[in-house]
Amino acid sequence: MKKLNFRKFVKIILFTAIILVLSFFAFEQGYEQAEAQEPFLSTGDFTSKHFKVFWDTWDRIKSDYVDKEKINNDKAAFEAARGLVRSLDDPYSDLYEKKKAKVFEDDLQGEFGGVGMEISEKKGLVTVVAPLEGTPADKAGIKAGDIIMKIDGEDATNITVEEAVQKIRGKVGTKVVLTLMREGWKDTKDFTVIRGNIEVPAVKSEFYKPNIGYININTFNPKTVSEFTSAYNKLKKSGARKFILDLRNNPGGYLETAVSLSEFFLKKGQVVVKEKWGGAVNSDKTEISKGPGNLKKLRMVVLVNKGSASASEIFAGALRDNLGTKILGEKSYGKGSIQQMFQIDDNLLKLTVGYWFTPKGLKLEGKGIEPDIKLEDKTPDDGVDDVLNQTIQYIKKH
View 1 (cartoon, rainbow, N blue to C red):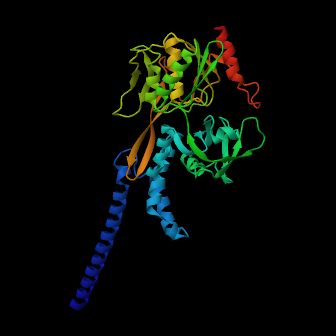
View 2: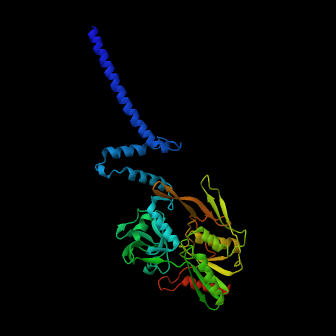
View 3: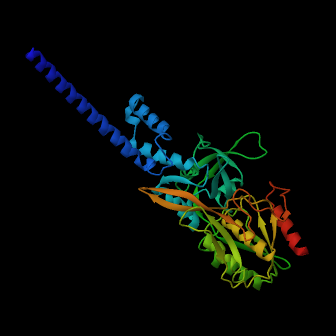
């Protein structure tokens, strides 16, 4: 009897030990999973309940996906983080590899290899904001508003703007085939573009008799202010007394450049643009002109179209709200948001952190600037700049 009790005692001890070991491993596994989820759980907004779909999906992939070699923890984490950004439905926010930052810097500096056009996401599709004048894209006949459906025969309707840029740019002298859809077309068309070394002049000018100075501002980069000064002085010496400031197909650039150029026209203390920020640290702010405003009485009009975006809209809005400057053309693009770059480990997060408003409070994002006088290109395919001709006729009479 005593022997039997001893055997039972031993069995109980062994059973208890096994339970303790299993419990320990279960605890360790649960702790590791909780530790992995800690960045989400610690905020209070992302409870385990909210992320159950995420963790259950990840567990199912690891346990049942047929090709285990394709499961990459680093890639999965990156794409999950990118999914957080994309959940914002903001075409200007994205997470991407650090090396892609050079694309933005090259664009702003005004020199890069490619076809020469600004693109953005609009209604979920990669869309041409503006082809830069004189570039391969412009010469090929690509226009603002064109939707990029394919790049070299590959579907482009489900890729990001950054991915499209990487595919479009390449070695100078090579070709890229862009399949585009344009408003009014029934079918897409292929455009074969030869890549070139894109060096875009910030400003171009022309004198029209008897006294009209035409200044085309292509972009707001570090060269814009000095090139504008040279163009203005040259036209003034030629006898220009009325001016056309052409911002058509100007995709924007540096805010500080737009502010600096505005200061030629706005006296000290006038508002250039208002900014509404979303972060806890960044407060709303207002960009104020430091003057001198020497050109405040200049007889001028501003010309915009649907390719006029960002800094060009700020500049146009500042002149109209402060000086009553007439804006001619068509409604601008409506890109009035502020993006900031944040380094996240080895990646860069481009995040919309604020919105721009004109001095009188017009929100530019998604709305754009309505012209005071609408002008339509009545002869779009004959090489004649009909809108410019209409603008010249208008300013002659005013």
